[in-house]
Image (cartoon, rainbow, N blue to C red; front, side, top):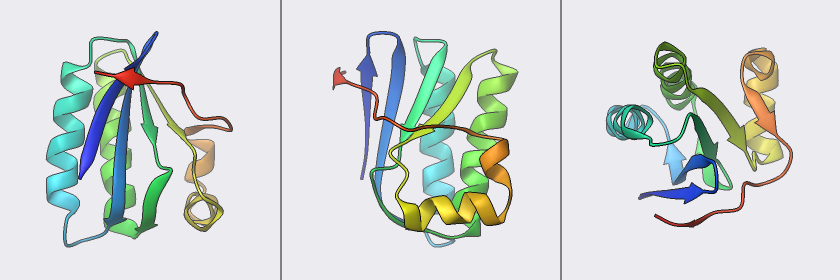
Length: 109
């Protein structure tokens, strides 16, 4: 299950659960549609409720970043658990993504 919300100046996407090869295609379709249709120039993916992620889930986020960049939008991650953050550090993608230390305040879309 995924949820999209709006913050005062950002579209916030809140995925949850496990992101792996089994559901990467669905996650990619959802993320691509949300980034493309976002009414704000800033997209934040809040990973607070993501329990695990493999390389397929990570590649979906890379794809989302590329889509956002192609549309002139910024793309950020927030609320990344230490167990997920280590994946970004090991792959050195922590230098590619802007990872916010604090969650983005949201209201229902």
